Picture 1 (cartoon, helix red, strand yellow):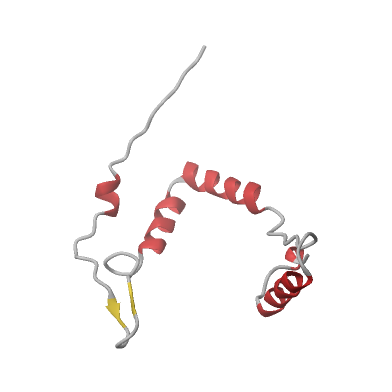
Picture 2 (cartoon, rainbow, N blue to C red; picture 1 turned 90 degrees about the horizontal axis):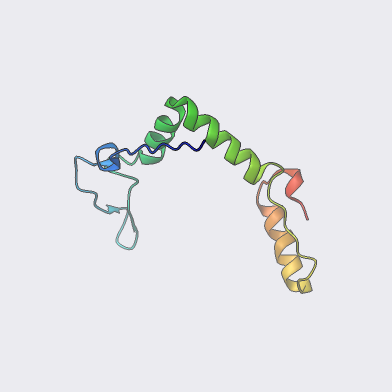
Length: 101
């Protein structure tokens, strides 16, 4: 027996902004686009994910499957210059110890 289900959410209603999204001017040379009208879209998306029991469980599973032991850098087949650049990057950026080459 085969069964299937399809759920469709009108994402236009979920992510519709009430205001026009315009670049934020920092100074004469620097501008950036905000994350939504109130610059909180990532937090709003996380709240929607966490409020749904099934979706939050699936999201956690996906994160554990994809990133379970962290990122690993393999510079074995690289030139000495690239290896040094990778080592410098790892020294300058706080990554978990499992990410060391």
